[in-house]
Image: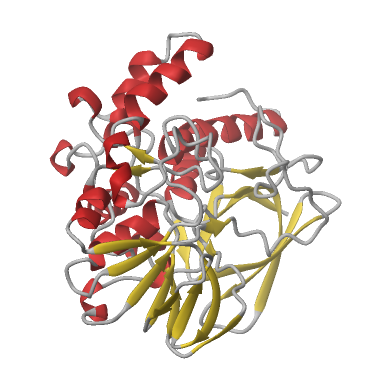
Amino acid sequence: MRDEVLVIGAGPAGISSAYYLKRAGLPYRVVDRAAVPASTWANLYPSLQLNTAGFVSHLPGERIPLRFGVFPMGRDYYAYLRDYVDHHRLQIDYGVEVLRVSPGSDGWCVETRRVDAEPHETAIYRAVIIAAGRFGNPVVPPIPGAFNGRLLHARDFHDPAAFAGRRVLVVGSGPSGVDIAAALADVTPPVSLAIRNDIVVARKYPYGLPNTAWQILLSPLPPKWRKPLLDRIVYQGYRDADDIGLKFAPNREDRRGTGAPVRGHELIDAIRAGKIKPVAGLAALDGDHAVMDDGQRLAVDTIIFGTGYRPVLDFLDFPYQLDSDGWHIRLDPDTYQVSGQPGLFVVGWFYRGLGPMHNIRAEARTVVRGIEQLWGRVSRL
């Protein structure tokens, strides 16, 4: 048995876990099938911007540079992650794919292979941290019919110039879908944006402060007062834009679609300028056309799905339960240990409060403390 903790994934969650494992003096091994750290962030579209403030989105022990602004661009955040790995001298084993994780009699049996080699390696680890992230498993909903054009997920969208002159339909009104539609607005004919139900548009700087700052300022209030006040401040900024054909939800929870809000006025400005056209949800595909929920037929060349992601769980080789939302594997809420599976932990899945980057720091520290306790050690964190 290898007397070390295996961390699966070298994105922000895995990097944070390695930081705390190193501080605790616990031997660890981080593996990632990519050749670079945080590979998802390395391949994002150039206009991507964090929708959580940089001053709460940093990794443990090192702030994001102020020069990156309140809401850092994705490329700047990736540079920060690369520098973080180098500065803290975190050891990462790149080009290693995890094939199977299963419980054994004295630990966790993990089967891996080198991406550029055929032989598999099997080893037993005393503890395993799943830090494969929220964005490794893109979701494309099943759409009836056949399409003659190009279909792709937001994960595979990189350069707006590659779509110049194309007739594009973007499906999904969350942050990714809206970001991509806005990025395409200047290089294509009017971009069609499919919005099935309603959309949450949040103010980025309500009353001159970042929305994150309002969450922090109002945090001492009781929840029964805090939430209505925060909704009023953050989510009611664009109610005067109902004339452009959007159905606004009052906040991120009281709605029928995704809970992720779109931040800022760029979408509304682009619609008013005729660069983005809201349409109904996508119902079917028919050759060169997209058939919408209201019966409208759109002639399009390309359909981009901004329809979200699911956690990577396909390497788990044992029966596990999903939480009530059908999305997360069921965990002990206090330790982030997989329910009924001692020594198997998860870091980096939860988008709540101040956002996933903020949560990762607390989750990683909690998990490493749990491993110290599991191994009978006095916590050094």
